[in-house]
Structures are given as C-alpha cells and as structure tokens.
Image (cartoon, rainbow, N blue to C red; front, side):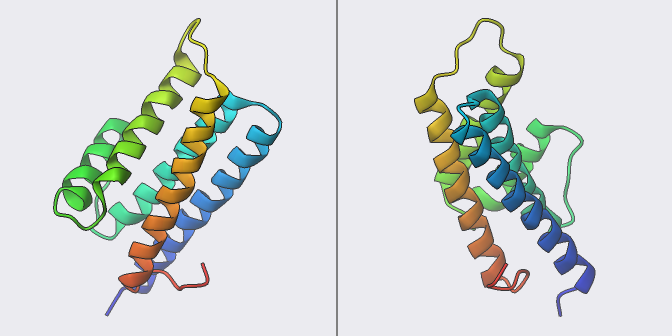
Length: 138
C-alpha cells in the first residue's frame, strides 16, 4: 500500500510544477524570456522532486538532484533518456539566463525550454499516475 503522506507530497510537488509552468507561459507571452526560462526549469525541478520523493531521495544542490534523477530513473529505463537531456539543457539555459553576463538569450532557445518543460512534466505525471502515486485528474 502506498503511504498517504507520500501521495500528498507527490501531489504537492506536481501542483508546484504545473503552477510554475503556467507562470513561465505568462512570462513568455510577455516576451520575458529570461524569467520564462527560469520558471520553466523550476517547473521541471519540482517534477523531479516529486519523482525522487518516491524513493525517499533528495539533494541540497540542483546538480545533485539532477544526478539522482538520472541514476535512479533514467539509467534503469523507468523514464526516457530524452527527459534527462531536456532537464540538463534547461538547467544550463537557466544558469545562463540567471547568471550569465553579456550572454544573450534568444527567443527560440527560450521557446525550446518551454516546450520541453511541458513534455517533461507530462511524462513525469504519466509515470507517477501509472505507479498509483497521482490520480489521473491531477
């Protein structure tokens, strides 16, 4: 039987992922690409936290969290390798957008992060639903 607290945590993290992706879309519609990339990456990050919670895992660093995701879910084949590539790309773009000096962020790059974030979150949602950790209406 799946622990009710785990299901609640997974649901909360996926709700955060969805809300944050919605924020990214609003920013993108306002041509605020840097902010959109930041929020799109964080939407993916919240989805990663949801899936890591299913194994009681976490890290204090983003790079550690991404490594755990790759090791625990991508390498064994539970989630597709494309999700890892998308997550790494979004992390790099977010770093550039937030900390890069004199590094332009073009709209096609921001659009790509947005598209991949939507796919990423849906694939994680599908995985969690199939595992019985998320209801299909969430």
